Amino acid sequence: MSQLLEPFIAELAQEADATRRLLERVPADKLTWKPHDKSMTLGQLALHVAGLPAAISGLLSAEAVDVEDADFTPASPSSKDEIMTALDQGLATATQWMGTMDDATASAEWQLRKGGEAIWSVPRIGMIRTLLLNHWYHHRGQLSVYLRLLEVPVPVTYGVTADENPFG
Image 1 (cartoon, one colour):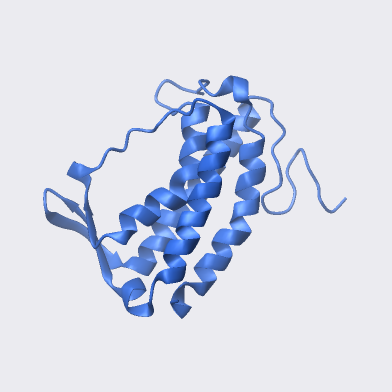
Image 2 (cartoon, one colour):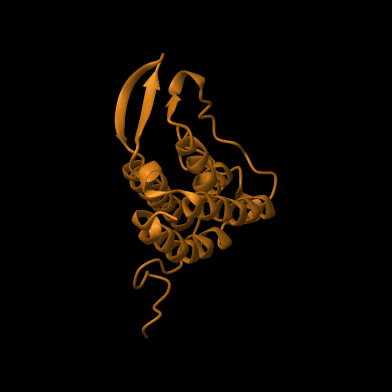
């Protein structure tokens, strides 16, 4: 296993708890709700958050991905159970994938291409930070706003929220 990736695996495991708390709050009867016509539905966003670890692991397993070959249309879940299952499977997939990678593979160049031409080249470990973890946190933040708009109590991620105080 890559020593370079040990902190990323630990971070994924630590952040999984906060992600699970957030996804558990998603109301099953509001999966088709969305705050704006241009927004994903609550269900699409929740499934995206749940499935990101597996999806990004799949993309980064290759040496490159061409955006012209990718389908970025968000899937719609049929149930909340589907969302929670996607989270469990996604975390297992990403943890296993990172756990089997060596330092050379983690440090190797990864490319995002368009029509075969590289538009972004970075070490794979940089994409793990950017596409896997930071992207995950970004959408998790969106999901917390969706919950707030639906009057669902927002769980603790770091510290306190207006709805929960683990210290008091």
